[in-house]
Each structure stands twice: as structure tokens, then as C-alpha cells.
Length: 482
Image (tube, rainbow, N blue to C red; front, side, top):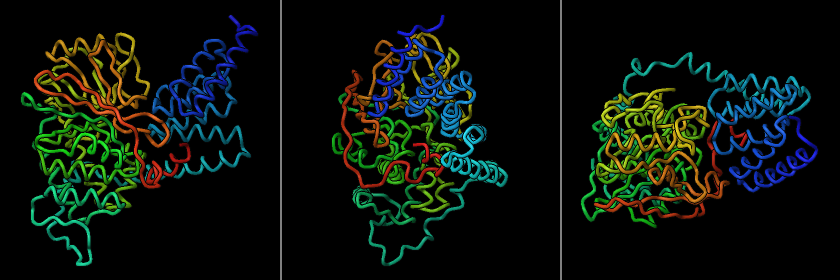
């Protein structure tokens, strides 16, 4: 049925409200309003393209591709449809698909200087990737980067005035001095950075893919979500909740790096505490602890700038040893992303995953890192374009089959820093407030006290940081679309 004049008018009103919400960085609200406009007038390509852009801001790239494709189907000459889809493909690391869309934008708008500039940058990015693929050596052939490094022979120059590690043991005094050095936007000597990372690697190598955590009765345990290179917000967590120690253990649930431009400081801090308190600092892999994400979203460029090329390879190796999930007191299952495309997955299946690889595009490991909950029952396509979405029935069945009480996961920005879903059986926790300096969200962490293991959620706001913008070290081309 064709839309009436009244429908068309109301659709435009929803679009205007959505545009205002978008400008206020209220992207979820913008999506809802664009959806209402589409419901009234589904043949307007602008509505679909605008909703695609809002999905991109929430990192829902799969949904953005779908909406932009719909805009293109409605109007094959609508350049913004190709532009939005190209930007979403770009964010997913699908440079070749992005290139095709930007070529189409240029074809439709041959005299647009912005389209010309972005097409050239996209062509450069694709050429670079093809070159890197051509010269890359497989992991099996390359062997361990870590095994080729001996930090003992690296000389510390007499004029170096930063904190030092005497001998093999990392001390709390060194770590505190390092935190202060990072606050001043200074870095520690490469010798000590190597020492921290290599010792962390040794610790991670000995851990299973699924780690059991035991909290004694009367003890507490804190779970943090994504930190994303927001070092000064990480320090704020420690101010609010205490530094990690044997009496104050933490689990950081993936996505330590990328987006924020203090990722080196974040990862060295977390790794240093892992070295200091191996049984009180637990670290899980997120989808951003991977080469493909680090290449696009800033960590690779930041590491190269602050520590040098060798560390890029070293961090990539260490990330492959990060555990994939944790179980606290046989009750709480903690994972970065979510659950699976099939029923019947047992904890023993997760424990037996051979995790030393870059995340695959399908299977249990991919789904642990990438999946998201959905309000509907059953399973659905991923709004990210990777893995899947799963409903409350999937959560309930997984918990029952594995004799667990609760799932804690991260992976998604939430306005209040957390969200409780699936009949209270699933909590998302996100610990990067005002994500990317634009989302306006709070951060959160969860404290559990044994033996009850009831979640106590603490929220907090962003704190000031030095004038270094997010994505400062990211792929040049991607920054053009932020």
C-alpha cells in the first residue's frame, strides 16, 4: 500500500527528530526514530542511508551494510547509499568491497573533491593490504617472535630517568612509578616493556582457554568490560575500586586496546599487574585483540609510534595466548562476546579450543569473541556482520546445561555502562565511559562477593585526559569517516 500524504509528513517529522538525536550522539534513539520513518515510508532511500550511518556509529556494521544496500536498491543513483555502505565495509576491514562502493560514488559524483580524495585513500589502503598479504609469512613458518628477543642484552642508557626494574622481579614500586610516568605521557624504556610483555606471555602460555577462578568465602572479585585504550579512565577504576592485589583481584574482559589513543599505556599496565599478581589479574581476549582490528583501529599504529615495529609482532603473538573465557566459583560464566550458533556447547568444549591463532570467521572461538544478545528468542543474524545474535532461551539453556547461574559479557557500549537482559541471567558490562569522546555513556564494573556471588554494579563517569583525540594512530582512511 502506498504511503498517504499524512504518512509522508509524519515520516519527515520522525526523520528530523532522528537527525537531532544523531547530532546529540544519541545513536540508539536516532535508529528508533529512523525506523519509525521507514515504517511510514519505506521507499525513501535517505531514511535507510541515515539509519545505516547511525548503525555505523554503534559499530553495528552488518546492519549498516543491510540498510545502505536497501537505499541503493531504492535509488541506484543515490551516492550516499554507496558512501554509507563503503564506510561500513571499511570499518569491517573489507577494503576491497569498500573500494567498489567508493568507485561508484566517484562515478555518480565525478566532480566531488571529497569523493575523489576518499577514493584515492581507499585505493592506497587496498594496495597496501595486497602488498602485506604478498610478503606475509604464515604463523607456522615465522615461528615465535618472543623466542627471538632477549631483553637482557638491551642497554638502558645512563640518561634514562624513568622507572627501572632491578633484576627479574617486577615490583609494586616499579608499577606505581610506571603509572605516574604514563600520566605524564612518557613511556618506559623498551627493555622493561619487553620484560613485562615476555613475562606475561610465559604466564598466559600455561593457562587453558577456559580459566576457572576461585574466590574464597568473604572475598570479592571485580569484572571490568572494554577499556579501549582509555588509560585515564582505567586509573579512575583503580581509584574507585583499589589497585589490583591478592586481596583485590580483577578480570578485564577483553578489548583493552584500539579506539582510545592510550592503548600502549593500558596494555602495559594490565600486563604489569598480571606479572605482579598472576592469581589476582585475569585477562580475557576480546575481538579487538587481533591483527585485523589493531591494523584498522589504532593499536598497531600506536605501538609502532611508541615502542617500534618489533612490538607490533610481539603483541600479536601474546594476544593469541589470552584465554577466551572464565568461570568464577562454578557459577558465573564471563566471556567477551557471547554464545553459540549451536546448542549443547559444554565448558569442556571451550576448554579444549586451540586458541593460538587469529580469530576465525566462524566457529566457537569466533562466537565467543563476537556474538551479542538479542531481545527476541532463538538466534538471528549479527548486527555486526560477524557471528550471531542469541536470545534468552539460548542463554537459559546454556546455563542449565553447564550448571551455571549467570553470564557476564562486554563488547557493547551501554548508556549506563551496563545492561541486564535475558530475565536477569545476562549482564553486559562496558568500562570505557564517554566512549571515543563522543558517546556520553557511563562506564561500569561489577563486584562479586563469595559465596553468594550476587552482582554489585558500580557506575562511573569519564575523567579528563590529555588532548590526544581517539583514533589518533588509526588507519588514516578510517579516520576520514569518524
